[in-house]
Image (cartoon, rainbow, N blue to C red; front, side, top):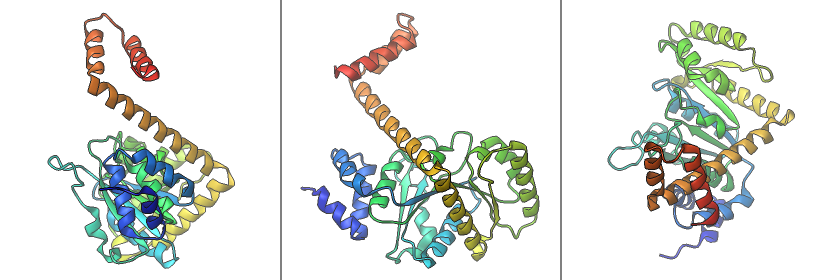
Length: 314
């Protein structure tokens, strides 16, 4: 079947959800014409605010995302949501399907929700997430929400992609320890203490304030927003904090710096993927690894061989 990329992009920019979904599918499948897709989308990007939401499993990320969606829609914002799920070991597809927890927005033409599988990619995000963000940005969404699998020792990649990173915690989950272990003090722009109606919520807020004070982080003062997402409480406070952070980013030139870092990370990931694909297919990487193991080549020299092959195309 012939595929007219320009027409598909035009339809996505007109707000046709099927065209948006098709473009994201091309991205996820690493379609042979993915380069053409990226080239067609790029002139229309750079307008959407990208907000990442992460936190331990069970903290209420999907419920919080749904509530945030409701508040943003009341403000007239078009919102795209990428819910990053673990991969099924059988199909490779999204396992949890977070869309089922956002059914109230399913018929809203101003909302687009897509579950994406990590497909074994470390860091809590799918490899295709940056390209999917580009699709939603070019399609005219004002805000793109990225809900990650969950935060952990290595699952902080969302900070490389989002303009603003929201870390959700909840009472009864050892959150003070979790915050210190996972390094969320470094990645969080806004803290949310969800399920704030439960016992221990004040303790979580107090512990967070102490950890923030000890960190002595300069610049943006990380706010802590108590919230009960299941009852729709605290949503406007969160949106206000997100708006204040966006204004701060623009006033201090940090928004441009973050987006340059995001682009650099994406370019690097694409280059590494291409390198791995080419050399895995040729068996070159395994041959070089074997030479490192039998001590006929050191790992730096082996890496030079790979880089030389990439430069020469051999």
